[in-house]
Image 1: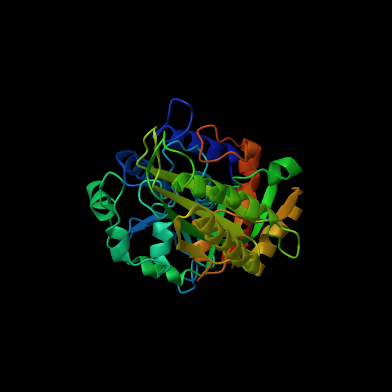
Image 2: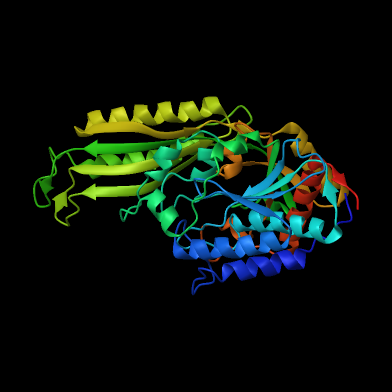
Length: 417
């Protein structure tokens, strides 16, 4: 541990001040990526970071990277980051906690006049949420080579806005090369859990060991339109075939087990019905599936079982069912040495902690493909996230901040003032 003047109260005040930008009537935040309020939040963050002695670099994808020099500038930097953008009905803490906890570490170092051997970076990633421009995690994905810059800048929102044009419009496209971030030596991220395991177990902190594998699908069921008054026999109703197939997503997730007994996770998130008339049996249904599992073989088994069920229903119902892979992210382990540093910190500080996986995508997951990475979770009430009622306590935020700081500064080589 260290004696830097980390302030949980100052972190909390900063969270509340940032939450006013894009604040909603229900107490949440609507600060979607590349909007005017995103620009406003970025500007406030820049002012705070520069007041703490940091120097900003802005890359071509809008990623904000603040540097605090180390005694040995030739060492690979240690980076802390997350995101400031939110869902349309988002909360105050998802992503923002990680960015502002990193800022609090920089503020404490600045106040103490302390140094680290390796440089430190503080990153606000562009478009982690993917609510306005899809897919999510574009800033980190582009930096790590998961996506090309060209494809990101050309992405369109549902209302036709172009990513690159909006980035320039709000004044937050820089000239730095995002791929330079592949030279980072280590990456750490603090985030709310977005689940109930920590709260239900009475834990102060979670140490994230890995990210679950994920596969997303798009499904199209095609049948034949029929009048609602026509006889039922012989109908090729696309929805009546799609409904049991959607129900199978949950059944398959709950019954596909890893050797450890771990279950899968399955979600149907989008459903579109054509022609969507009260008295017509639909001829076409489109829906999306999100599958996740901590065991790669079990994730593949979930896909195989779903495709088999689709084939059965197509035959039974006289419809055509097309299942297409939309996106895949493999099971991603985090760095063993960083994990142990976080565990050691939590133990030394007397926190009740547990190892935990993340079933949710984060910038850290893309970073971990190229850079030694770890995440720290703090609990959130009821596991509620992507919701205006998202809630944590100042004590949880402070515990996460302290473990994040201990692990980051041990990695960067804190030189005591």
